[in-house]
Length: 88
Image (tube, rainbow, N blue to C red; front, side):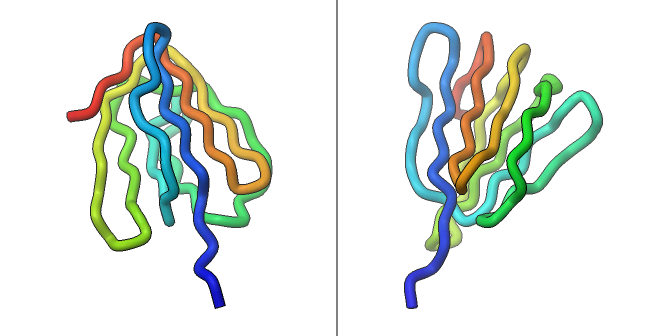
């Protein structure tokens, strides 16, 4: 049985920051922090300034700062688009 993952794209206005498979994404939106797992319902949210935490299938964690943008989820694809984003 294969483990379900999310395909994550983290993009800044001027560059692709990170892309890959993850088992969880946590991001700050203007309405509060949200955790995304495989199978999440489709949604669109406005990013708050803060950290995006990506947990890989092996448990390793990637962190990025992101501000001024949005995130979308559909069919286990999470796209984070920000004016400014960088791995930290």
